[in-house]
Amino acid sequence: MRLSSCLSRVMVRVHQGTGRPMTRNVHFTASHADTARAALSVLTARYGQAPLAEADVVVALGGDGFMLQTLHATQGRGLPVYGMNRGTVGFLMNAYAEEDLTDRLALAEETVINPLRMRATCADGTCTEALAINEVSLLREGPQAAKLRIHVDGRLRMEELVCDGALVSTPAGSTAYNYSAHGPILPIGSEVLALTAIAPFRPRRWRGALLPKGASVVIEVLNADRRPVMADADSRSVRHVTQVEIRSADDIRHRLLFDPGHGLDERLLREQFV
Image 1: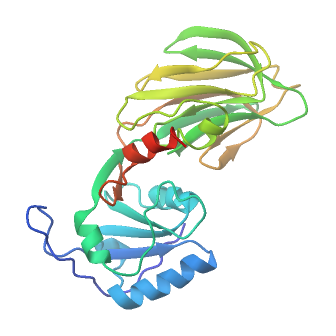
Image 2: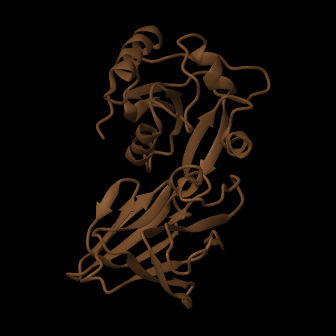
């Protein structure tokens, strides 16, 4: 993803007791949606635009998908990202407003999350590595159900799972595809991952498993030639996989900023009472 950049700065006032620096250079970036591009024009005209290399914070304008793209694109820079919703659901975003952005950034609360690291082996022997902030999923490619064998930390835990697929989700991603597949919502900081089956046929009522965050999950694809399976890490897809290894990438930290009282922990709790 190419992030837009110009050559001006925005000054952010320090609030008593926050310990924030006197100035913060803000880089705005936006999805291709018309509403996001319009917001980018308004906000950069009002607050200025710092080049990404000089930024202290990134403000992402779009939906949850664009937030994931922004986190991947800014990985390694150590920058916090503050999202404003110009998409649909906006679970990872704050409410959009043109006023008081400097104050909102100064008061924002930070949440740190770790992505998953996927290593997918294909039928031709090639390996692909990718990172996923929400989940790594395996999905059948053809009309027949997938047959999967599951190992956790080197121990065989399920000989055969017949299903449309399976996924491993982070707490931050637990309300996305995982929740749609009837997986559990995981509190931020719970130090667990969700392993969830997608439309399981055998065992028919298997509800998945909660795993320690440090667990290594290896999923083998049985009869891969007749029952092809693809792997997906935050929309980066790999076809015809025979084995996928998934583990938490604790060496990578993504910093998200939220308005006070509207952080991920509150959103995850609120989602369970809808």
